[in-house]
Image (tube, rainbow, N blue to C red; front, side, top):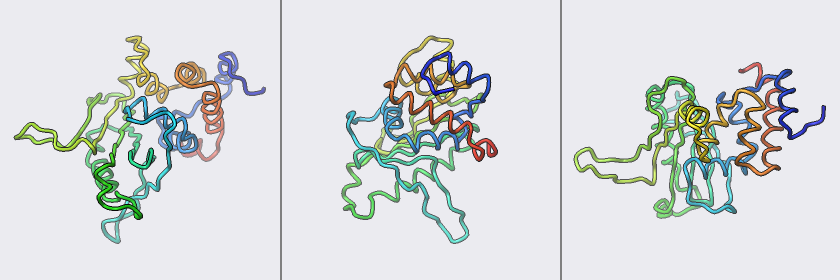
Length: 234
């Protein structure tokens, strides 16, 4: 059967093939690391970022520096830079955010230590921003939506918001979409990540993506769900 952007086609596909969930980190990385144009639209709507439609996006080396010789290598899920000044680390978590908080703080701090890049003046760090987007797929998450910045407990003052951690509970957004009829772009995007069928993924993505990008996303999802390595790991 030829690939068709039609609901009927994906309904038939759902009878034959299981969609590997995008909340599975290897699936998430497989889809978005190879489709940076789609990732850029996702980030712009979810964070959102102060960028224009034509800004460039570049995939960065996500291996973190080691603190000692015994420390094993750590690699963040997806690390990109937009227009050479906005750095974004995206982490897909399947456990409670409080259980990965300290780890992700260290990830963010290590990434911060890598700025600016080798060929840049240190002063350029003042014009850069670093975001860590925590996408939490744990179904009973208590921290539903938050932004964590450098904050003074005595002065009640935000000292820096150029580096921050953004927390998004995916099940909360799924509930907003299906039970509260919220159709804002960020809600649709975060619900896309919770898709359980090809039909659901298609119906959601066609609301916010152009036809050619819907096709790219769906082809990538189908290909990934047939991949022996991904299936074995999942």
